[in-house]
Image 1 (cartoon, rainbow, N blue to C red):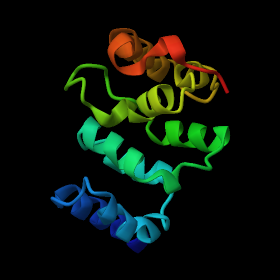
Image 2 (tube, helix red, strand yellow):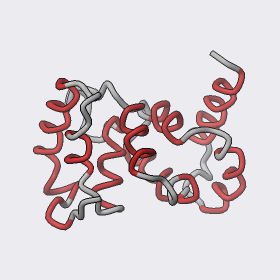
Image 3 (spheres, rainbow, N blue to C red):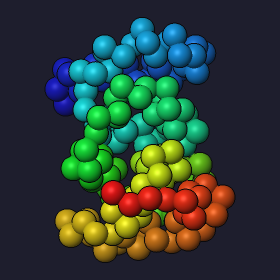
Image 4 (cartoon, rainbow, N blue to C red):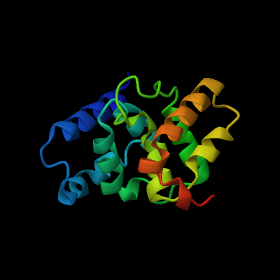
Length: 148
């Protein structure tokens, strides 16, 4: 593990443990520090945190994702693979936060985008389909998704 990676882990753990996490002011203070790291790497580490926490992190840090391209989002999806087995823990598992974020907030059909990736294995694709089938109505709002 490199020093830079350890610094990122320390920063993300401190953020997770901080009571001020859900304030915009807190994130504004840390945004320059967060920009030192790839969003894919940040989300891959945060996948062990609670889904709502990671989703809030994304919503509070738009400067980290506002200019991301399709290729960038595919890289982020790739960093979160292998996907956790759906529902072995809880529906609030952050292992699918990228899919939720893209579908619900960015109005992108992230499921289709994910399934189109030849370099993603069939096991992860099956896990995503199972997960999305069970949560789509309540969490993904598939009826109003736009395509890239």
